[in-house]
Amino acid sequence: MNKFLLAPSIIASDFTRLASEITACETAGADWIHVDVMDGHFVPTITVGPLFVEACKRAAKLPLDVHLMISNPDQYLEVFAKAGAGNITVHVETCPNLIKTIEKIKSLGCKAGITLNPLTPASALDEALPLVDLVLVMSVTPGYSGQAFMPEMIEKVEEIRNKLNALRSPAWLEVDGGMTIETIPLMYNAGANVFVAGNAAFKHPQGVGQGIKALRECITDY
Ligand code: DX5
Ligand code: ZN
Image 1 (cartoon, rainbow, N blue to C red):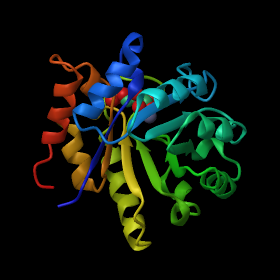
Image 2 (cartoon, helix red, strand yellow):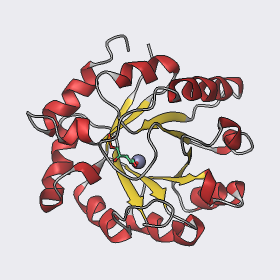
Image 3 (tube, protein in one colour):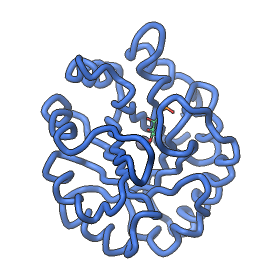
């Protein structure tokens, strides 16, 4: 019986209708709008930057959950905070001084998140875990929407859930990549409580409203 949040990933939406896509997410009961920032360096793809976050901010009432898949995120924290990010999540692989990065995100008035690639062990989070508001587990190799979920990540979510519980941390435990009505219940049972969805939300045959409704209804025991 735990609350969970849905964070549709806006890069899977139709950018020509950005404002109405965001409004549709809000009307359908989404909780955060997830924005995937990719730099073509830390990941092979280039998506969007701070100007896009700013445009989302103008259209959105919900918090923007900004996932930075970029090298040297420290250099850009301020600009993303100013653009309207509510949460800023950085990859541990990109932060030589993770504690300092988390403190900086918080000092900018944002919630601080950390994430890790599928091949990075959960132990890479240990030092920072007591300080964060959010932990994001990648259940695909970051870079593209529409990839298949990696079932090995169920165990990683369980491991991180145990660590958070041991710390009595209220941090959100979020999962990103290949989340569908089939995979969300698996991750929820493993201890996750925020689910990012790109394709499952925006590419639903009856539109994003129905996509989000189906994702909301796939967990019945909360
Ligand atoms: C993966 C991105 C995801 C992606 C999710 O590199 O971080 O947020 O957009 O898309 P789906 O849900 O389609 O896997
Ligand atoms: Zn993401």
